[in-house]
Amino acid sequence: MAALDAAGGYQSRGALGRGRSTVDAARGVDLLVIATPDDAVRDVAAAVTPVATTTVIHLSGSLGLDVLVTHPRRGSLHPLVPMPNATIGAQRLRSGITFAVAGDPLTRLLAESLGGRVVEVDDRSRTAYHAAASIAANHLVALIGQVERVAATAGLPLDAFAGLMRAATDDAFALGPRRALTGPAVRGDWTTVEGHRVALAGMPGHRTELAAYDAMVGLARRLSMDTAAVPDTVLAGDADAEQVA
Image (cartoon, rainbow, N blue to C red; front, side, top):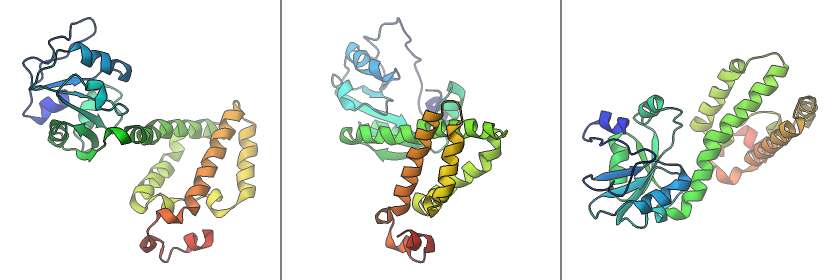
């Protein structure tokens, strides 16, 4: 709530922590935010006495509005940004990030008050949306962890690859993933790919490392051949795309 307080126009009444009754939490406020772990949202919402004029929202990316079914005004607001602690979280919430919203119009107003971009995600699309979010954050960090482990076998620190990773990410957003993709799997340099696999096979935990590498090679090949996902105007004059096709 610190981010909303800083945005102006809102005044927080504070938080109700563990062990405190939430029965009357919706009384005397316009908005009640349930910021518990996903598994607890339904039970916490059910314990709160509904108030017709109070909007109750949760911050879960994976849950729909059904977990708030006892409340007449309900919504969800999920910020698409990692928040490792309260200080960094409050800063990032006001940095122009994307918010996935659903339900009561107040959720959109909250996101806009924080200067965010708003996308509507209904209950039917919630699981796919959250899977994409998990891949974008959790899986990406796990992949960087693999970079760190493999780089260490060559005596190199992770930050030696920082420029490469940032440039590749920037290219993916600027050009689209298909046009930004480079590397041996795209070119069909299978001798190089097999050399990578041999190197990984000599590492501790090699089965996991190889499985991850092989999976990403497969995704790279799929992306390189997925011309149907790229507009014709983008592929026009793309020599690499023509060679792959």
